[in-house]
Length: 155
Image 1 (cartoon, rainbow, N blue to C red):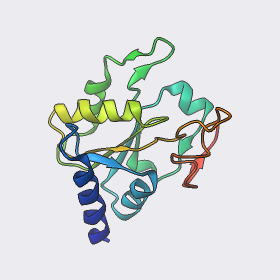
Image 2 (cartoon, rainbow, N blue to C red; image 1 turned 60 degrees about the vertical axis):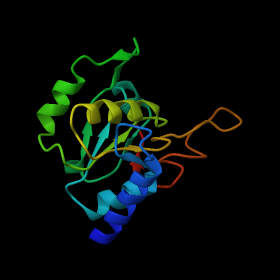
Image 3 (cartoon, rainbow, N blue to C red; image 1 turned 90 degrees about the vertical axis):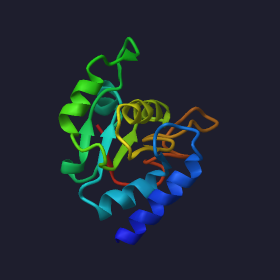
Image 4 (tube, helix red, strand yellow; image 1 turned 180 degrees about the vertical axis):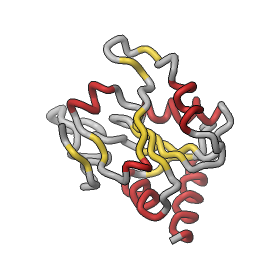
């Protein structure tokens, strides 16, 4: 399975093409495969506590899952304690870290921020937990963790 991990991570790095300071982006399914094949890979869910409580969470090994708000609700301001909490939990700057939010935007910001703080294996999960809105304005149907039928629990 190490070969699968290497292929997926190399593909993500190739698609990055040095546009971002973080290592690259992966699909939710690729992220789930990585998590299932390496207990040392961690997923950092950067959604607000309100989102986690109202919308739902990924269902993965609890030892691989961490919640740290990137922005605070309802102000939508950056969490001033984010990096302190992060550094307290993650000492190894070479560890593979996957970042998740609702749509993939805040997780991209968080991955970039953490990478600028010396962590070299930060990956954004494209389209996040809920993905983009469909024509009716609903999420969880077109893209994202939920639409790819990956394990999750609702609130």
